[in-house]
Image (tube, rainbow, N blue to C red; front, side, top):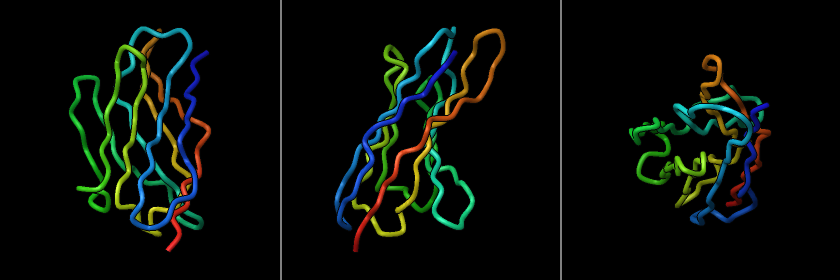
Length: 118
């Protein structure tokens, strides 16, 4: 059974920083692309950033230059460093990972709340 466990959300003032972490645990052969999504109240879930197992990254336009995604393959962990946070970044952030065992499947974390006050 694969699990993604997130940590690092919280309340921060505009302009502040937070770092999210997400660790994959369980039995698997390889963790492929990992990413962070977010969902604000009344809105659809959207991709924030993702990173391949080789380290190639992609970002939503709204976070470019402010957020940095990274990963530690030895720990099967992905991070999201969020700087210069804005009130519009307020959302539940979800970790996602494509994990290979008998086949490839997508897994989701439980979500962590990020609230940015103005």
